[in-house]
Length: 110
Image (tube, rainbow, N blue to C red; front, side):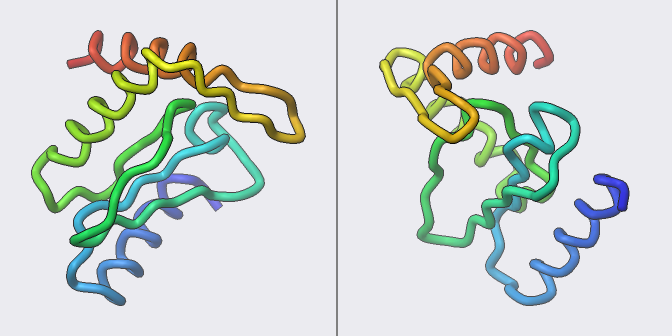
């Protein structure tokens, strides 16, 4: 199934289940590699918080009129100044380096 169709279906499904959804964020290999065998999704409702999205993200629904993007950018700025390393079975990812690259890419498209 194409990613765009899947994004629309996920967005529609989540909004149908919960009316208090602020944002739906797709991240992980589907975003930073353009494909993946799974989908990593964060659904943000009132009172929740954001976690690391340094390898790339795409907001597919945002009821907050851009506030979610601002929060993610702030988190990425803080992460880019740290020395966090994510260790997975595929190797180690220096999150501060990825956060810096992602910030640079996002700011150049604004």
